[in-house]
Amino acid sequence: MRQIVLDTETTGLDPDQGHRIIEIGCVELVNRRVTDNRYHQFLQPDRDIDEAAQEVHGITLADLADKPRFADIVQDFLDFVRGAELVIHNAPFDVGFLNAELARADPALGRIEDYCGIVDTLKLARRQHPGQNNTLDGLCKRYGIDNSQRSLHGALLDAEILADVYLALTGGQTDLLLEGEPAAGTGSAAPARLDARRPALVVIRAEGEELAAHRAYLERLRAGGRCLWPEEGA
Image 1 (cartoon, helix red, strand yellow):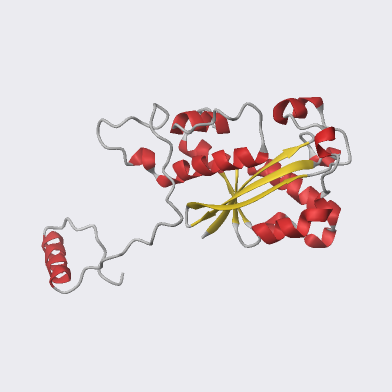
Image 2 (cartoon, rainbow, N blue to C red):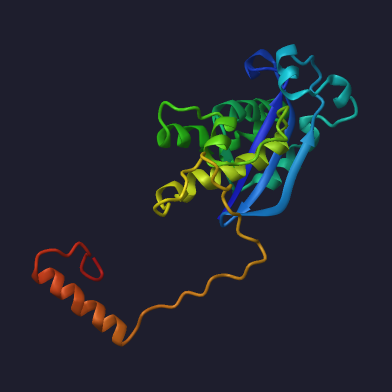
């Protein structure tokens, strides 16, 4: 399974008012393992950057003067994300900007949903932690993820942090704590990443006497009316 954790920085809040993407950052996950594969691009927006937006990400027009436009990199970007599942925090925001940029570059390109599935980690977090602080910073605190480098927002840095948050959100760590272990967000370590070089785990399946003993045990449970396992093949 290939997933792309994605974040953008923009000139403002609303693509319908002509605001543009000025930075895209992507981190690849393959079978829930963070790889070294990244996509990172600054973009020339051909418009001013709102002061409030600049205070968030710190990117100025001078920083972008020699950068390509979205239309110049759109094929490389689509080639990178094509067929993957995009993991985005507050997905409607980034998806709205991506679709506006695609339409501006070439309406025939369609929508980002035509190329990728979408997972919204904000929606996942609200379902898992209703009524709590589910910003990216809030989730980092809850799961003990180091975001000390995040004095300003940056698309690639935020995508790397979000990759750890997503693995924590979907890994079930908070449901599998042993008695006496700290809960996530109370000093627990960040979720461990599996080394991409680690060989696949060997699966040893039961057979012969082990299967026969298992069936006999299930029969005893069924006789007592306490068996929750379905019949084989059910």
